[in-house]
Image (cartoon, rainbow, N blue to C red; front, side):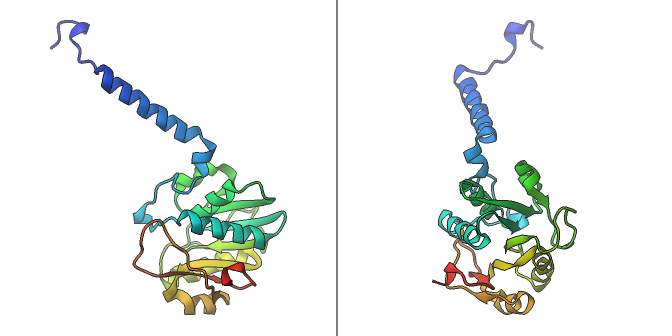
Amino acid sequence: MFDSDDDSPQLSAQALAALQEFYLEQQQKETSVVDKFSVGAIEEDWQLSQFWYSKETAERLAKEVISAAGKGGKIACISAPSIYQKLKELQNEDFSAFVLEYDRRFSVYGDEFVFYDYKNPLNLPEHFEPNSFDIVIADPPYLSEECLSKTAQTVKFLTKGKILLCTGAVMEEQAAKLLGLRVCKFIPKHNRSLANEFRCYVNYESSLDS
């Protein structure tokens, strides 16, 4: 027992300063618009099969979908939050974007976040009308026929026609079969090395083929 308040354990001045600095950094992360939309602002969760694109890849793909959507275009990012984040960084362009994602941490993006579980591919908000998006970009979380097949249902429901799919090279045959997509020359890169080779697939004339 302590005889008086003076005997209570106290943080040293150095520890207190470090604690205050930590809280300040946390507050800045929560309030900074730049941090909020930076790729990596929300850390990868490997248990959810999350692997963020490199800065260069995210920017290339974001600019691709902006171009494909056209002026005033509407973009859906299915299981591709790092592309959505890069789109928001490039928001000087005239377009709108939504992120459909299982990870509820991305709900920080407000009305542009839509909870999405590929196992229930058509469980979508009422205001998401059929064929209402100028382009849909999708990056299914798992390299399986089931995951791609169900994600494809969402893609076909939402898109007016244009589709950009990012997934493993091993899914090329299924991408063609399910969505009529062809592989592009451009090879996407991630911040971390992955065991599986990734590729991009489209069904329209794309700069990713150049």
